Image (cartoon, rainbow, N blue to C red):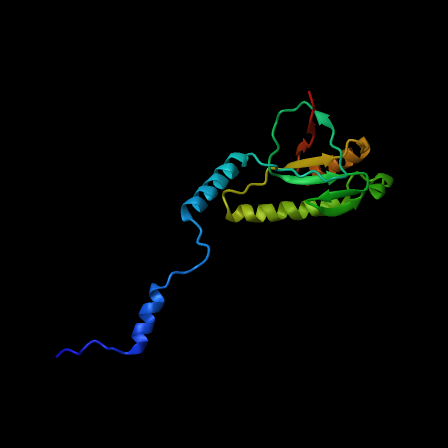
Length: 172
């Protein structure tokens, strides 16, 4: 048994709505894909696989050197004329360190100890992470050698014996 097609006005209204053309701007998909492709190529070309590993603070003037070795990702100490910062955390005041006769800087010693213990704990569960004792020191070129000596001695006491000094490449 078949039923006759419905002649209700609602179905006729729906049919006419679907046939209407939208008025307004309809962007071309092809040109948008072209723009996105050009942006992607530009970003891939400008991307550096080496990257900027060390970010130098504004008030820090690094010494110049002719060294060609690229920086590696490791623990970073920043030393200016006022503070000693370990991974952007203030660990000591330079004036207090210079006034002290002690070779070990307590705040830095404790921070390095915590960092080393955390790395060794991760090392127990991961084969990719190893404590190597690598550290990069970003020191202002105007800091005193006595301060640098205390920093290096403190790092050495915690097992951070592989020092790298961050420098600017000499202009030729």
